[in-house]
Amino acid sequence: MKNASMIFVVIFLSSILVSCTPQSTSLPTQVPTLTAYSQTWTLTLTPSSIPVTATTMTPTPTATVRPSPTPIATPTRNLTDTRILKDISIQEAADLIKNNKNNPNFVILDVRTPVEFKEGYIESAINLDFYSTAFKDELDKLDKGRIYFIYCRTGNRSGQAMQIMESLNFRCVYNLSGGIVAWVSAGLPVVK
Image 1 (cartoon, rainbow, N blue to C red):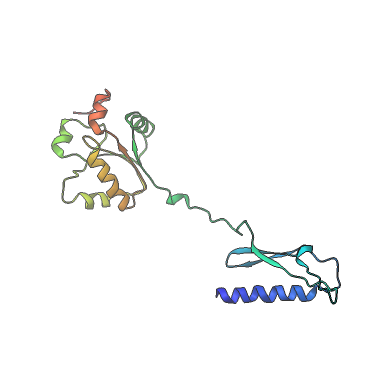
Image 2: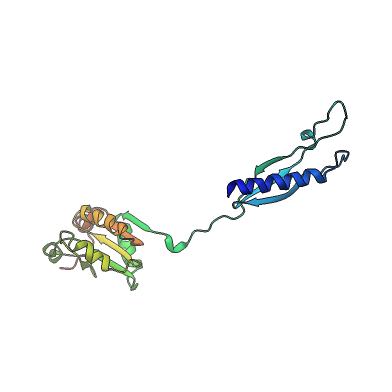
C-alpha cells in the first residue's frame, strides 16, 4: 500500500512537471499539498532547482518532495484514560480527605490486618486485609472509577496494593507515604 501511494505521488508530480512548459519563466514556487498515509507532503519548485542545459538553454524543472513539518491532525487524548497512582505526604493526605469529605466516589482503604485495623484507623476507612488469599479478588470487585486513598502501617503493603490496583486498571489511587504510623506521629486523628 505504501508503494501505491509513492507511485501516486510520482504520477502526480509528473503531471505537474508536464504541465509546466520548459520555456516558462514564471514557474510556481509552491504547489498545493498532497496527503498520503495521514502525512502532508509539500511540493516546492525553486529557481535554483531548474538547471539550464548548455546546448538548448531550455530550463528543465525539478521538484523536491518532503514531509511537511506539521501533521494533518494531532491525535487527541481521551481524558477518561488518565490514571493517577501516586504516593502522597501526610499533609496531602489530610487535604485529600478534607476535600472529599462529602464525595460518594471517595474511598479510604486500610489494607492492614483486622487486628491492626481495630487498634485504630482513619475515619471512614474500609478494611481489606492485604495478607488475605482473596485480597486481589476483593480489590477487583471494587469500582475502578472511584478515587481511592490507601494506607497500611508504614506504607509498604499499601505501596504493593497500589501496584496491584494499577494492574487491575484502577483510575485514581493515592498511597499514604509512611502509613498510619506517620499519620499518628503527625498528631492526626484515628478512630478506635
